[in-house]
Image (cartoon, helix red, strand yellow):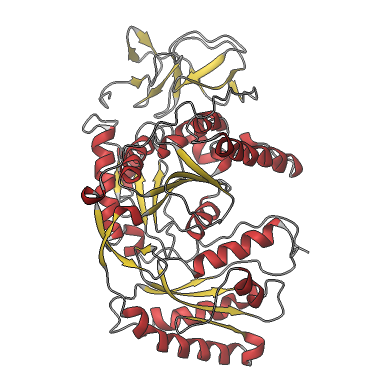
Length: 509
């Protein structure tokens, strides 16, 4: 990999652009006898060949857009002279779906986790207070605060905390629509999540999202570690807070009695996420995470790629890795749903790159997606899931979610992800209780500026101090350590309650 002293990096011999590894002034040498014709910000693209108007702009050996005018060698290549390429992409189903070479069972990596009765393994041990509707959110938060901020957990060292999972929905929605289905699946997924040892579910009582219907639909039953109540039936907010606190006091010794024991890495379900991406994300942090993802899959674990709008334009790379035509076509069906969804909402998928993405050097959704899919590594795609569906296959899988970080991760965790790796170039800082979130910085500058929030620096790949494989192995070790209980930086700051955001689809009535 190029040294940070080198001015630019070319990612594929077929590319006609390079990425600036440092800010270039007009006239600066780019190597190979080329000079910058304009100021090129760090992380942005510069032409290394003449590009004619209408010609494909190529990065990663793939088309990321079309030139809107003639672009000379050394010119800045970005939103001012590149547009989205809406052309169809060729699919070669299953052509790259090589059989995974698994580590023998006896040699697989291990971690210390919480083995649950259903065979799943927790990396944390929380009690969750889940609101069925926004009307019970205040009460739910008050219950959690009573234990977390008033010494209610003293003596229960195996309980990581009481987390309030509240949201802004649950009523005034179509009880037969997609949004209602997603909400029910999300709440049920968290209620039976392996990182949660006990649950109190609180409703108002008159909402569309009835707790009784939710429990019946997902086979949830009351037990010493699962209780449900409504504010109206209990007699108001104060009585409900007191009743819920009494239930949790009885629950705490049971939840605390669960011990960490050695578990195979096959029990890990890792959510792959990126946010605040920059021009380096697809060069350093994402491929390093992809290497770690391959290690986890080969050790029998599961990795979950999501954010459907952020694989748009790179979906052909995923269909080629599908284990069957059915899996490939299920992915394309979700892409088609999104194409229709954005039209209905008077948007387009190229709206996805944010202000920060563009400031960091990303120009089109095609470019962003091509970098984003590298998080998934190289193993075969074994399954495709709709939002918050329970993940029941091993290996590399895909879940349909929006690109919004909080909404995406909420769906992944609801599906069973018990750990998250989150790559960022601009500096995303979210936490996602009850799942620990490992932050991976794409570049040295941001890592140095935000060391209190970044768990792993992948910028060493750009500086030439480490290879993608070196950093990938470091990430894999970090995954095992975190799964065994070592706090991430977001956990050390007690972040993560506000990022529970179920996907709201459909009309609010």
